Image (cartoon, rainbow, N blue to C red; front, side):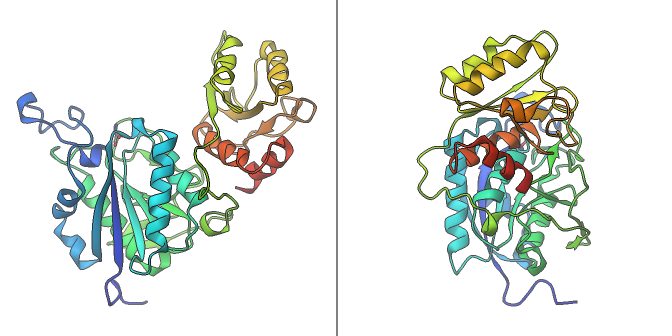
Length: 340
Ligand code: ASP
């Protein structure tokens, strides 16, 4: 086994964006010890680092505060900003890896976007926390330490963007926040890629799909992402809801449908009309796991619809937006859903 940490110590850029890991209960509210009563995005990057002195043994860290927001407030312009900044850092000779601190609520979306757009083999690791630093058993310090340990380890390169939370290492392609409160809030349908064991990454599986340097998506010349909306179905839907997305400029709509991605029969004609106007209809599942199978419970070929394969609806939105930067052909976009 190679010595860890390597000598000289790796140089890691820490990009802070806010979230609960930068959150705090406020004394005036008397809520310091509680884990749910706090404000996100208060503590800056330097302070986050200072709380974990063990970091200095693993890497030379350079911290920067790119954003200071609750991750619910990530809009596409901020996502592009983050992807561009991480790309710039990865391109530098004096940066060996990047760690991004981020709110947990939309971490799976931002991490996936970078997974498909940052052209670098260097480790890129997202982390955050479920509890603010002022909680009695805050999880942020250990998560940050583990994220830096994973980023610093040579075995973490060329694995795409990773999400390190609660001693697990997940692929940004697969991971989803599955609990609103527990520390064990992140899960991947096929399990994590690895674990952090005694401070070191230990890998159990590899990701077979392309990412980062192998991805075809190029954001360097993009001013904005094509607009894609998502609508989750429930009983008693209204067709007009889908029109609202088109009226504000959406070029694709991800439908989080029932079970295997079922679209209610009473919406089929409306979807066909939208499709005739050039809008992509992407069939996803609201179940949280499992593939949507083409032509299985809807005539996708006849309608010109796209299925997500196994991608969850929020990430399907991002993949559809990136696909729209390459093509207007729904059949080609379908291939991208199978490829990525
Ligand atoms: N609302 C927070 C955020 O996503 C939650 C967290 O970070 O855990 O920014």
